[in-house]
Length: 339
Image (cartoon, rainbow, N blue to C red; front, side, top):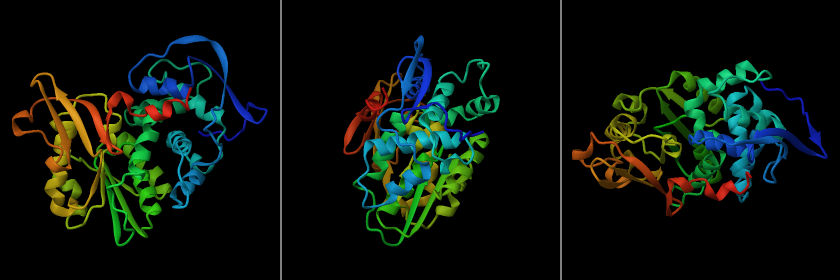
């Protein structure tokens, strides 16, 4: 459980010890992308300049203020504290020392291995239980980047009148629902409804609890590849459609994990998406077997030609923030803050 004892504070800055090269935040991000962190002698680390030990709730309130010009550092603060609050019940309201944040990232970087003697067994078990969805958050740079992209997306509805209905058809941790809530509040919407869809019972209950606590919407434990999952959206005008899965994907795209979700969503909602914005705005993918590259976007319903429906595609890049971002560069703008 979360320990609010503000320990190891030296000269007003939190200190940690780590046996990983660079920051534990970087090491966890590497692990989330299936790399192996190198080891060296234990060396002290200090909180990076971006980190402010305010609560997650406080940072979110700041981002929701339309008068606030959000910095990359603020997005990173929300990303790492959301990760911490996902694992530690009630931590969203606490001022968290960087040492505690860093410890959790270090633990995640080795959570598939055996525990160390001093590990909190319950926390390590949570990391393992929720590992599939936590991989998006553990890569703090990517999580911050996709939040910035959603909140600042220029083609998203900005009129601030009527209802804002946001959807995440690949919701894992709920970070995209939070980003949509922040965007809608910054644009002056009073009636904001955001819905996430996922079928994983293990992480689904935790995601539901956290996003409800943060006022970021609701998570539906339903199979997003089935048309009936989206019944509540029929006849409604959708403002935004996201897919958190895309930001952290480490596998090929296929009918079961990608194409059928969009197919079911479009079949259920119909022309309700005519004025909706999407994240990603587009996705570039390649099939080695078919020797074909495709662009998946709103215009083609994120579908490949019918002759390729049984093929697997490797995601190569996202269209976001008005440009093509190769997947290996997703989060690149934020990496310099973490080392």
